[in-house]
Amino acid sequence: GAGVSQTPSNKVTEKGKYVELRCDPISGHTALYWYRQSLGQGPEFLIYFQGTGAADDSGLPNDRFFAVRPEGSVSTLKIQRTERGDSAVYLCASRQGIDPNYGYTFGSGTRLTVV
Amino acid sequence: DAKTTQPTSMDCAEGRAANLPCNHSTISGNEYVYWYRQIHSQGPQYIIHGLKNNETNEMASLIITEDRKSSTLILPHATLRDTAVYYCIVRVGGGTSYGKLTFGQGTILTVHP
Image (cartoon, rainbow over all chains, first blue to last red; front, top):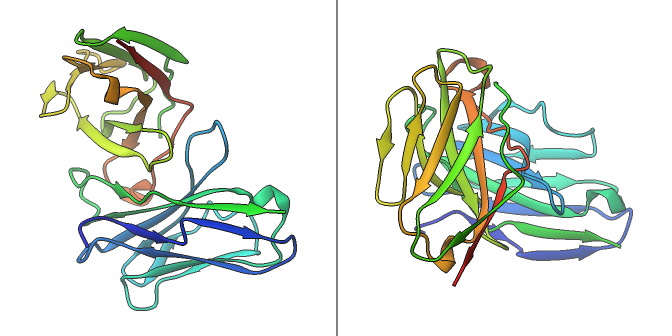
């Protein structure tokens, strides 16, 4: 497609459950990023993929969070044993490459609510 | 990456120029200035970026001071659809930190009729 697609757009889950959030980047974009945005705050970096590998996962808050990108395109962010504090909008972005002149294209996000 | 300081909020009349300042006094020589905006319920949208020189595109102009310690994003003729949170981000163009943007609180720009 023309943009970055994220599914689902909204997800409500019970505390303690497992969730998967999907990101379809722009075709051909090798760099993929996940961010998390809490209400009233700017997006916060979670993890960055260059191709299939996670080049920087320093933003993942703890080991309940994991992300994969097995074929270098679609990525899945996985959250185990969800907590109410995980409630946020999870944003995905992709770039054509890492040259500073390549812009980031963000998806509209998945709004996760843990009840 | 260098820290940025932006006003919390600004107002602008429709049709007038909106000038959004950003202070980045600790910027290094290899760090770029990026501007993004986020309209309610959408992901951030790229606006413009620059290193040293002033830049202009179809959306906006970016004015970077000669010492690069501050910059101004200019929306020449603001419309109601420009109401959004505007983020000024400074980051290294390459190296180990090339993967991420560090967002601050941004400036809430409200364009009034």
